[in-house]
Picture 1 (cartoon, rainbow, N blue to C red):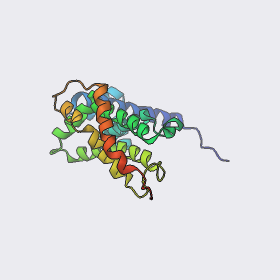
Picture 2: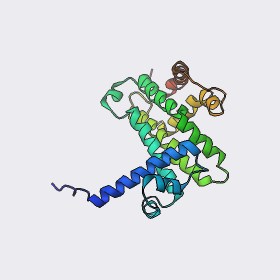
Picture 3: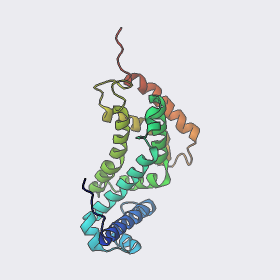
Picture 4: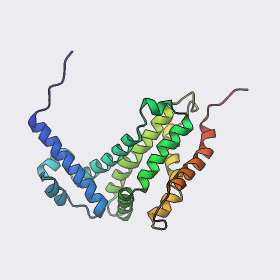
Length: 215
């Protein structure tokens, strides 16, 4: 059986520079937003170069896409949806756990700052908005969709479009609480309020997910 050769010192160093650029890009997006995002600041803070940025990310939008994708990846990893423990949970508990983690992520200061920045710059930077949607929201939607599709056909009705359901679920749990937090009407959202929002949403959605029982 063949094995892959160990990465060279040069490749390891290049990966370290890329990781540093993404990390500093994430920090800067949280701090100043997408519209004021500076490639020069990222290069300076990470100790990289514009040549490295161009080689691995292409351009400014490519680096922002990588930063947003990293945020989504960390969120999905923290949810631990693809584990034996998660798979053993009844569907209502598994969904509640996953959606609770997702809503906490959306309500976090960094996510709120990023979303506000993307919205404010959407008309002048539609590419940034598309990147945010594709690399952020859609990645989290897919993780929840995978959770649902893995339960077909026993817990979730066969033939159901799990991606569409997951997208609707994420929009539903953000209605009200997230919108108020986003525009500054609610400085703090309690765990109790988050759990209540998710429970109410699932009470409406779960009956529609259930397999059809024949009389």
